Amino acid sequence: MEQDRNAGKPANTTESSERIFDREALLIRTLNSMELATELVQMCLHELPQDMSAIRDEIDRGDSPGLSKSAHTLKGVLGNLSAEAACEAALALEIIGRQGALDRAAAAYSSLEYEINRLQPMLTAFLGADCSDLPV
Image (cartoon, rainbow, N blue to C red; front, side, top):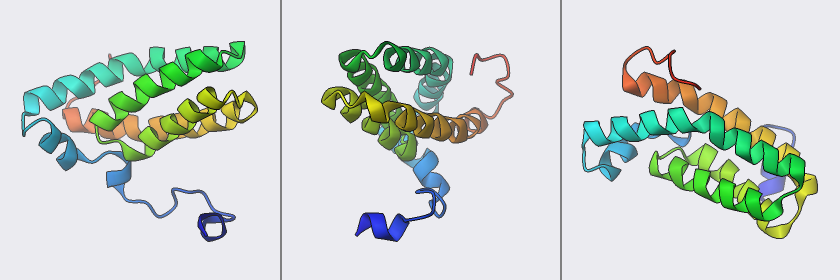
């Protein structure tokens, strides 16, 4: 039983860094094009603040369809980057929006935010440069 196994501990205590960001999977996905992979990572880092803000606003407004759509879009971006843990957190919000279960949205948003905060430094490191000028 999944619940019993994870009871009392965060779901991510033993996960590998590949669940946060799988660099090799991203390169395979981009046919080993470092240029394309870099462009995807840069676009993600640039858009994340707006994406997260839109999701937060939709939760605050009680906009279930908007939440579902925005979370679905972000899930696609994160999936393309091979960021499995954040992708799963976005999926949870997409489902919450689809079901209109906004009473669970705040906790799910916190999980997504946590995963994004773990992902961002790994994406920045992937770029191999100081990206402090990016709005992340």
